[in-house]
Image (cartoon, rainbow, N blue to C red):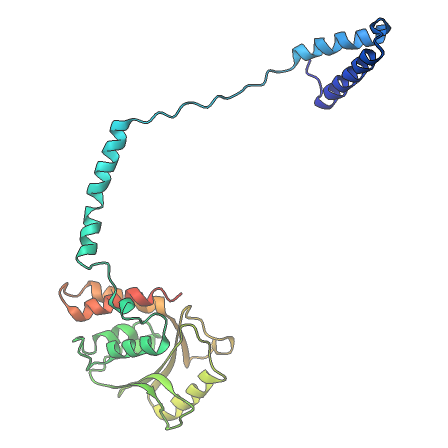
Length: 265
């Protein structure tokens, strides 16, 4: 029989209280029959209590030969990593150049890559990759030559400054670049109004390039405004760079730029 924990401690407490009282009175002969029976019962039940198992900690054994082998193999395993670092494979030129999350600087680099006249040597190929991220009606366009302007005022109004304008015979694109900033007051609506006028009968689109690619609520059902994330652009540019020649400096720089902008999230 196992004593209820509360019952056991109550009996134990009562026993010692009675024992203390007897010692104080120096009258051990006053131990009456009831107390004697209680003492017998206590020791009987105490013997039936389960033993408390004490788990002794096992000593830590270390095989020094295996430990030595581990560190020797580890040093060999990290040699390629150290070699890559020494050869500069871990660097990112755009991060080293201090682009960080500066919208004007990143916008300038993006415009340079999208420009068919850029000395990256890719002509219109990077723009064609960018078009694949847009709605289907723009993916089939393959302009060889087009006008691309950074920080332009399409209708001459200084209050409406477009980050990147791409104007070809087939379409008109306005790219609004955002990293940490938010939409200005009625900014996208003003760009929509300008695009309608300037595009005339051509296809047109406002590309809202942001960290998450989400449009403000009022434009989510607007076919003239398209949300695009930096991460999607980074993935598209990386795919293009990966199939290019390994010694092509232009696509290497593009891959570096993709590695930089993918962190805008």
